[in-house]
Length: 457
Image 1 (cartoon, rainbow, N blue to C red):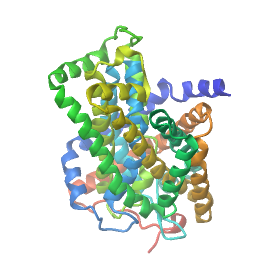
Image 2 (tube, helix red, strand yellow):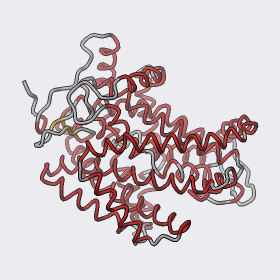
Image 3 (cartoon, one colour):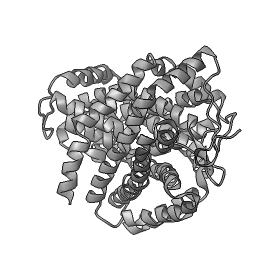
Image 4 (spheres, rainbow, N blue to C red):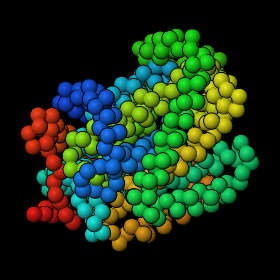
């Protein structure tokens, strides 16, 4: 079974998928005339000036961004970056940057469509995301893609963001402090239940406090390492850019890397980290208190900027500066080695970061899965889904998850394909809404949609 799924993944995440992901981002960037890069300062000001929101919705625009970041900033920022560099060389970080720059346009378009085509469920809460902008924005011939996305999205989280995350935390705590995996699982189950059983508003409240704390804390400690080794920073950037276009020779336990390896693993890990194109983040942004899809889109694109261009960059720079690649170690262990050599007790930074990042990922993805289930089965499925999500947490600490991880990778690819098709087809609408907003001509307000897509008024 593992061999079969590995073969499927080699196709699902092969060159065709990477071209589709990057191609969609490039197409949207060109159509928006690179507005997503030019408007970063404006987006930051908008986020800080409108933290509470001023329109219909369930959570503030800031809370929506923090909820999406809670799912996005995860083990990929620590282990994923290290894996990309270990397999693709330092140049993989350069291609992660490129992926993020075009991915900002993808994330922007996702959020614009999510707010524009969102609905309210039977309980009055807002639901949105690829399944809704496929159903409400595309011809009926495409509606099967909405069902496919919701099905894959409701299942993917149990692997990617539930059992795998709790397993990672239990292993780290067992290795560092000798904590029994089942104890870790039960504690995490209680903590996760205390948050997600309160719904999206409680998730947003916790994320709005915890995500800035953990992201700023991690970046600050990485910045200390960089400042202490400031003379090595210029050479590190030169190494990263050079390695992106030139093969990297084998050194010590590092097997070397080709230019294709740098491109492949940089793009793949970049997408896994910032999730631009997967269609997950717009589910959170659809719940924002706003009537302006374009404004929420600009706030949403900051998620990719923060996740990859800031957090992943800091991890990558520490690894390159501390020159730990020759060790031959990969994953979180490589990041741990870099921090432990740079700072006394640096390994605790990585341990704490992994625990917090994994916990918030479980919270954010629980909401994504829930909204997918609501699309498929209605609001009656919310409580059973939440209970099942909570009960799956300790299971992840007790089982071997290689197969689960492979299946999650497959489901992620199957989520991305319907979403990317929808974004390519809805691109002209995104461009029009953006032009109207920038020109001040009836600034592309969200549709007033009731239960199951029925327009109101």
